[in-house]
Amino acid sequence: MSSPDLPVVEFVLTIEVYNDRTAFEPDDLPASYRRPYWEGRQIQRPLSPTVDAARQATGIERPWEAISGLMFTDHDDFSGSLSFTDGRMAEQWFLDRATPTMLQDNPVLALYFENELAEMDEFEDVSYEQAREQNRPARADRAFIDALLEEYFDEDEEDEMLDLVDVRTPEEIDQPLDEIVLTEQQEGEIQKIVKAIEHREYLAQIGLREIGKLLFVGPPGTGKTSVARALASKLGLPFVEVKLSMITSQYLGETAKNVEKTFEVAKRLAPCILFIDEFDFVAKTRASDEHAAIKRAVNTLLKSIDEVSLIEDEVLLIGATNHPDQLDAAAWRRFDEIVNFPKPDVQMRADILEIVTYRMDIEEFDPYALAELTEGLTGSDLRLVLREAVLDALTEERTTLTQDDLVDAVKEFEERDTLKNLDMMDSDNEALVAGAGHDNHDHEHDH
Image (cartoon, rainbow, N blue to C red):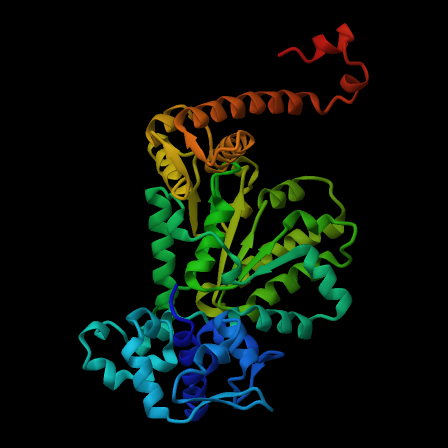
C-alpha cells in the first residue's frame, strides 16, 4: 500500500496553489478535491485545506498524522487547517515522489510545475491542456447537480421530476466502456460521437447541426443502457435518464410540462447525455386512443427532441427501444444514427465471458467452449449464468470454480428460461391458476 503522506501533501499543495492563482477555475481542481468545498452551485475562494477537507478529498482517515512527521508541515489546532512551513521544501519533496499519472490527473499542479516537468524525461507526456481536458468538469459533480435541481424546482416539483428523470454523475456509473464488448458498428458510432463532442465548435462553424441524436435498437439485455451509461462515464458527463412510461403515471400532473422540464434539466446540466428508454412507447401512444393529455405529452416530447442539439445545447440524445417494429416514421426521423444491438455472436460471447470472469478463479476455463453452448443468450444472460455458478459453488464452500460448474449453470439457466417463457404465455389467462389441473384449461394453453 502506498504511503498516505504523498496524497495529503499533494492535496494541501494543490489548494495553496489554487488559492494563489485567480486564473484557476473549479474545473482545474481534481473532482475529489472539489467535494468538500461546494456551497450550493459555487466553490468560493479561498479554500481552506482543513483536516476534514483533506479526509474527504483523499480518503486518508487521519491526514495530519500522515504528514506530521515531515519537517515542512504544520497544523492549526483551532481552525484544523494544514499548511507548509517551507513551501519550496514541500514542492521539492512532492516532485521527488510524484508519478506522471498523479500530475496528469491534477491540472493545477500540471500547470504549476510545467517548467520543472519539461526537464524531466518521465514527465514529457504530462501537459496542463491534457490534464484539464480529461478532468471531470465541476458541472458533473453530484453537489452541483443536486443544487441546480433544488434551485430550479420547488420541493413538490422536484419529487415529481424524480419519478420521471434519474440523474447520475459519471462517478456513480460503475460500468467502464472498455469492459463492454462492442460490435464494429457500435465502436464506430461511439468514436464518431466522441469526435463530434471534441470538435463541436468546428461543426457549429460549418453549420452541421443535425448530429448527436442516436437510437439504440435491439433485444433486452444486449447492453443499450449499459453502453449509454458507460459513454457518460468515459466522457465525464452527467447522465440524465428519462423513464418514458412514467409519463402516464397517475402521480404526474401536467405531463407535457414535465416533458419540457426534463429537456430543460438536460440543457441546464449540459454538457450531458440525455437517455430516453422505452422509445417505442411514443409510437404506441400516438397510435392508440390514449388520454388527450398523454398524447399532448408525447407530441411535446417529439417537438423537444427536434429542438435539442449536441452542437448548440451540448446535449447528446440517445433513445433506446426493444421494439423497433413499433416505431413509426415520425419517431425514426428524429434520429440521425441508428445503432444496432444484436444478440452477441459466439466470439462476442467468449469475449464477454473473459471480461466478466477476470476476477474469478476458474479451473480449466474455456470461454469459447462455453460460448458455443450459449447461443441466443445476451450479455445480461451470461452474467446471470455466472452469478448462479458462483452461488452454487459457495453453497459447497468453494470459491474456485470449474468449467463443469459453468456448463451446469448454463443448463440450469436454460431450464429456468423455458419455464419463464411458458409462464409468460400463460400469464394472460388468470383462469389457468384458479383451474389448475382442469383438462379444458390445460388444452387451451397447449402449444
